[in-house]
Each structure stands twice: as C-alpha cells, then as structure tokens.
Image (cartoon, rainbow, N blue to C red; front, side, top):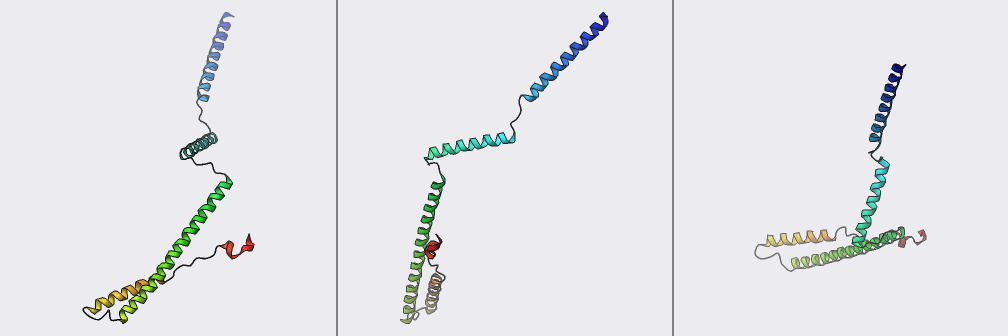
Length: 155
C-alpha cells in the first residue's frame, strides 16, 4: 500500500505542478494584451481633440459652434462677393480704357501716323494695339444679381 500511496502522491505533485505551470503561462499571455481597434481609435480621437485644443489655445481661436461656423461662412461669402465685384469693376474699367485707346489709335492713323520713315512698322504697331484693345473688350463678365435679390419670394 505504501507503494500505491507513493505513486499517488507523485502523480498528485506532478498534476499540481502542471496546473501551476499552465496558470502562470496563461497569466503571462493574458497580461500584455494589445488594446482593440475600437480602443485605439477612441484613444486617437482623444489625442486629436487635445492637440486641436492646444493649437486653438496657441492661436487664441475660439471654439466653433454651429452658429459660429455659419456666421464665418457668411462673412467669407460676403468677402468673396465684394472681391468679385471689385474684379468685375476693374475688368469693366479695362474694357473702357481699351475702347478709348482704340479710338486714339484710329485717330492717330487718320492723322497720318503711318506715313513717313518705315511706315510698315507703324502699321504693324497700330494693328497690334488694335488687336490688344479688341481682346480687352471681348467677353467682359458682368456682375449678376445674387439669387436672393432676383427672387425675394424664395426666402
């Protein structure tokens, strides 16, 4: 019986050692688990929000709300419309100046500018100016009324 008891104790000790070894390796495998993709995404979103807050604080930019964004867009639109109107006025002034220059060139030709020494070069010069002024006057865009001004009933 001692013999069976010794084998039983040896088997129990081996089983206990095996269980202990299995548990300790299981803890090692479970210990340094990497976070899931969702957790990493949440962490990255938090970091981006923190960095944006730091940048805003450095540049003293107030946080944008829905109304502030709409107000900013309206201001940008008004600025762009004002700039477009200025560009259109400039283009109209260029076309008017081109028309006046074309009239001066025609007057110069009528008064004999092309006669004298090397008249061909003078004719080429006048023709070039006339082509240039014609181009300046062609397809000049005009300011159009915004949609709100054209149809006030759409509001």
